[in-house]
Image 1 (cartoon, each protein chain N blue to C red):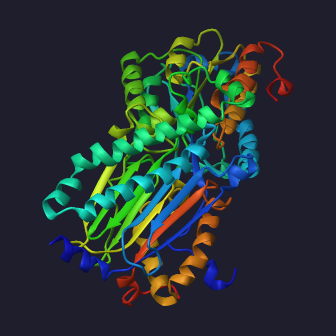
Image 2 (image 1 turned 30 degrees about the vertical axis):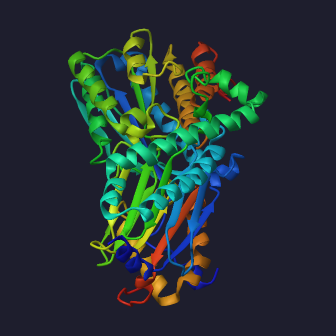
Length: 306
Length: 237
C-alpha cells in the first residue's frame, strides 16, 4: 500500500518559490532582516518530499539576536522534517499512521525542533559571547532574565511544512500565516488562527514550554487535494487591507500562475513582498513561501485580473 | 515595474492602524481652576505632535477615539477619527459629576475585544486623564480584569496623567500595570499640556518597531515626572 501511495504521489510535481524582503522600518532603524526562509527537496518539477520553513525573529530590543535565532530555526527545521520524512517513506501503512499521529509529531518533530534550536542557540552564544553593546542592553532590561534563559536574545516564530507523498504536515509557533487552496478552489487556514496573537504579541521558541504553544495540522492530499500552500510572516498579513485576505490572495496567485506560468510568479513574488515591506504596507520584514501543484497549472478555471 | 509586475494579489495593502483611546475625566471637580479647559487645550495641542509623528514614521495611520466619564461613561468620539482630520469638540464638566472611571475602562475593553479590534493593528494606546479616583470601584476592578484578559488589552500601551493632588496615583498605577512606566502628574493646570505632550511623545516612540519601552520611559516619561514646576519642551526633548 505504501508503495502504491507514493507512486501516486510521484505523479504530482510541486513548484516552490520563496522570497524575503527587509522591512522599511528595519532599514530606517538600522535593524537587520530578522525573517528567514529555507527550503529543500527536489524542487521545480521533480517529485519527492518537499520542505519549507519560515521564521520571523522578534523585533523587540530584548531579542537582539533574533535574526540568528530565525536562521537557525529554519535550517534545523528542514533537517528535522527530512529525518521525519525518511521514516515516513520507509514505513508500512500502520507505522505510517502512527508516525503522523499528533502525539508522535509532538514527541518527535516538535521536541526535536525545540531542543535542537535551544542547543544550537547556546552553541552560537558560546562561540559568540554577548558583546559590550549587547550586555548594556541586557543590563537595561532588568525584567528579562537572560542568565536563566539566554535564548530570549534569539527569540523567533517558526512555521514548518513538508509534503511527504500524500501527507502534508504543518507545524507553527507564533504569528504568521499558513494558507491552503484546496483542489476545489476553497481556501482555508489548516492551522487555526490563534486569537491571542494580536498587535505584535506572539508566542516564541524562546518562551518557557514552547511545545505547548505549537499548533500542528496533518492533511491527506489523497482525500483532500491541495493546489497551493502559502507560508508567510506577519509582514505580509499585516499589510493586507482585507481582514480575510486569504481567499483573494490565493485565488489571484492561482490565476496568475495559470495565465502567466510559474516563471512570472517567481519574478513577481519579490515585488509583492517588497510592497508589503515598504512604507505603503506594514513596513515590517516580509517573507513569502509558495508551494504550487502542477495540477493547478494544468487547469484554467480561475478568472484573473488580466 | 511594468503593468504586469505592479499587479498585487488580493484586495490591496495599507499601513497598519494605531488606535489611540483618550479616557477623559469630566467629573465635577474638573471645573476647579479651569482644569477641563486646560485639558481641552492640551488634547487639541497634542494633535500636531501625533500628525508629525505619523508623517515622519510613515509606519502607521493614527485613529483617535475618546471616552468621557463622570456619573457614567460615554463616547465623545465613537467612530475612529484619522488624526489629521481630528476636530476636537471641547469637553465640559458635569456639575457635581462622579468619576465613573471603571465604566470608561469597560467601554474601551469592549472596543478592543477580538470581535471588534483588527488584529493587524499596532498595539492600541489608552491614555487615562483624571483628577480623582474611581467612584465606581467595583466597576474599576471588573474593568481592569476585562482589559487584562484581552490580548489587545495586555498588549496596549497604557499611560495616565493625574491632575492635581486629588488624583489617586495608586489606581492609575494599577491601570498602567507596568513598573517601568510611572504616572505623569500635572501639579497644576499649566502642566496638563506639558504632561500630555510627554505622554504623546512616549506613545509615538513606544509604538515604533524595535522600540525599547523601558528606555522610552527613562528618556521621556521619567524626566517629565521629575519636572515638577518648570517643565518645558527642553525637558521633554
